[in-house]
Structure formats: structure tokens, C-alpha cells
Image 1: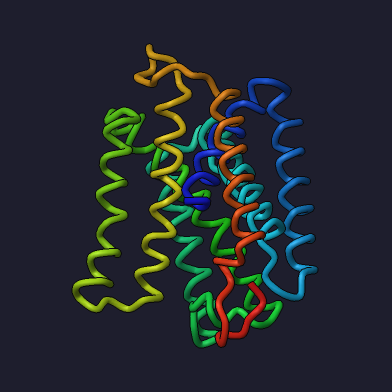
Image 2 (image 1 turned 90 degrees about the vertical axis):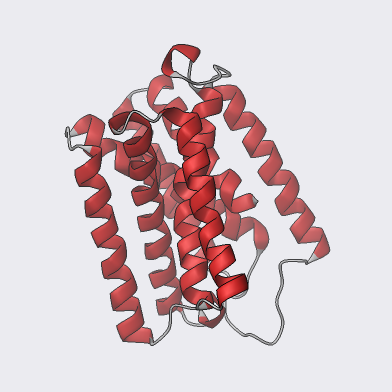
Amino acid sequence: MIKGLSTAMGEVTSDYLVHAMSPVLAVLLGFVGFWGALVVQLRQRRYVAWSYWLAVVMVGIFGTMAADVLHVGLGVPYTVSSGLYAAGLAAVFLTWRRVEGTLSIHRIDTLRRELFYWAAVAATFAMGTALGDLTAYTAHLGFLVSVVLFAALIVVPAVGWGRFGWDSVFSFWFAYVVTRPLGASIADWLAKPVVARGLGYGDGPVVLIFGVLIVVLVAYLTLSGRDHQTGLGGRP
């Protein structure tokens, strides 16, 4: 739930910032926030809910900006940017697998493995942003149909793993990638004006709602410890 909310919040926060201030300043702030949160996370010697999810949220914001810069700033079509980010993600996975021998998040027990993990996360956010915009704008499906499409896609790894014994690591990353365009499509559907086939609630209010929900859920995890796994080792 927090992952989905963070992807949605990243989408609308990016849109809000680039309209509330100079786009160059917004991207700069996103970049500084991204690296600041990542440094805080990498300094942790064990999994800490607030620092981990802060890093995820900031990756979501900056990943959205990175994808939008290619299209809005440089005029790269969403079909091309989606392919570029997909190739980048594939390169991260292939390198990670060759160097470390596994892509399992339960085996992230060194700094190098964690760096591979965050590189993959950043690539999934950028690619997912481009994919969501590709279906909504380039394919003219709109936000709601995009929500339905990606909601159906995210069920695929759940059924594959639960009913047909798909590899758990593959199923995890399949679902992880799809959460990005799903969350972004939900956020755009809620925030964008009716003329753009959204519900018109606005970026600011949607950012606030998603932010409050994330804080509440992370506080719950911090107090309950429900997100801690034993016997697996590892940093995150």
C-alpha cells in the first residue's frame, strides 16, 4: 500500500512543483531531496521504516521529473523514453545479477547490493512514469482506463506466483515495476482537471492526502514492527 501511495505521490508532487515554481528549480530541488534521502538511507545499518520510505518517496518524485524532462524538456516521445528507461532497467538487473548472483531483496546485506537496489528502484520509477503517460496520452486511453489496465497487470504476478509457482524474485519485480504506472495513473485521474479526463481535485490536495496516508502507515509499521523479517539477514 505504501509503495503504491508513494508512486502516486511522486507523480502529483512533481507536477505540483514544476507548476508552482521554475521547472529548473523544481528539478534541482527534486535532485537534492533524492540524494539527501538516499544518503540518510545508506547510512542506516539496518532497516528503518521512516528512512527507507522517505528514500522511496524522493525517488518517486525525482524519477517522475527525470521522465518528464525527456518528454517535456527535450521532446522525446513517450514510446522512445519508455524504451530507453526499460533498457536502463534491464541493464541494472543484468549487471546486478551477474555481479551479485541474485536479485532477491532478502539478500541485500552489503552496500554494493543496496546501491544496485536503489538504481533499480530509480529506473522503475522513471520507466513507469513514461509508461503511464504513454497509455494515457500517446495511446489516448485516458487516466481511468490506464488505472484499470495496470490494475489488471499487477494481478498477473500475484496469480502466477500464488497459483502457478512462478519464481518469487521475478514476481516481486514484476509487481514492483507495475506499481509505478498504476499509482501515477491513479494520481493523475484524481488530480487532473475534468477537461483532461480527470476528477479535478488538483495536485496540491492529492499530494496532501497521499502524504498523510503514507505518514500514518509508516508510523504504524514503526510502532508495530510488522514489516520486520527475521532470519533473513540483510540491510533493508
